[in-house]
Amino acid sequence: MNFSQTYDNTVRTLEIKLGDLVDSGSEFDFERKGDVLDIEFEDGEKIVITPQSPLEQLWVSANYGGHRFNWSGDAWLNEKDGEDLHSFLSALMSRKLNDTIQV
Image 1 (cartoon, rainbow, N blue to C red):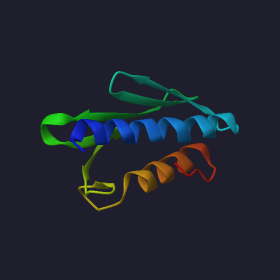
Image 2: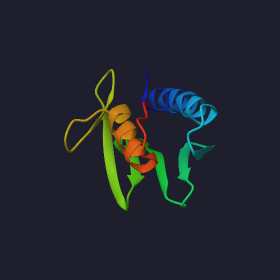
Image 3: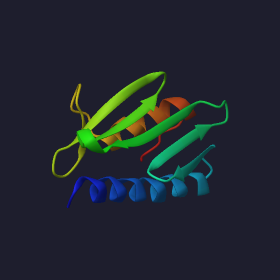
Image 4: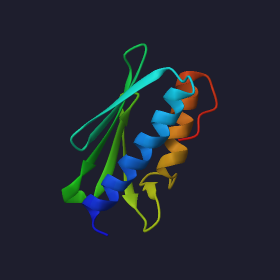
């Protein structure tokens, strides 16, 4: 599978999980615009997930910082500390929503 397919599959999976969270009462919105996935909280803060095709990376912009993830063959891993994308997003959203969130 190439980078674009891998990224698209990841975003589709995230959309399903985020939709389930919203349906169960979590208070945030999300929207996909082309290849970009925006997650927005009630206070206006956002998490933005974008592909960086030339680098074959997935970038997450959150809390005024950028985080770069590389595909390892079975997971997106943060290039700084090796944390996988789902754990990273779960922790970030859990802190933001003051609830235990699994993405």
